[in-house]
Image 1 (tube, rainbow, N blue to C red):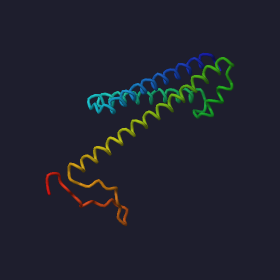
Image 2: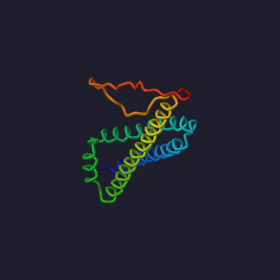
Image 3: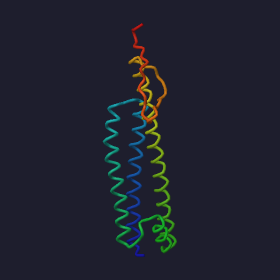
Image 4: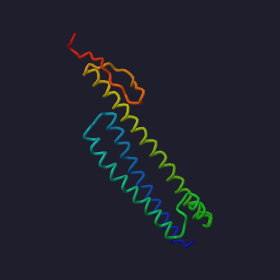
Length: 161
C-alpha cells in the first residue's frame, strides 16, 4: 500500500477522533445542564449536539468512502485485513488510532445512555409531581386484558375534602 494512502487514512481517523471528542464535550455539557436543570443551556447543547452528530456522521462517511475507493472492505474485518498488509510501523500506528477511536466511541455511547437515563428519571419525577398537583394517586401502571393502560379514577385534589 502506498504511504500516501496510509497518511490519508491516518488523517481521516484523526478527523473522526476530533469529531468524537467534540461530541463528548457536548455530552458532558448536556449532562451538567441536565443535572442543573438549566433549560437555556439544554437548548444550546441540543443545537451543538445536532451539529456534532452531523460532523461525526460526515467523518465516518468520509472514512467509508475512502476505504471503498481503495477497494477495501468497509467492515472491521476489512480494516484489520488491510492493516495486516502494512509495514510494521504503519500497522501499529493505524491500529492504535483505530483502537482509540473504537474505545472513544464506546465511551461516547455510554455517556449518551447516561444522559438518556437522567432525562428519563427527571421526566418520571416530573410526572409524579404533576399527579400530586392534580390530586391523582401515584399508582403503578395497570393494564386491562387488551394490554392498554387503565386510567385511574382515584383523585384527591389538593384543597378539597
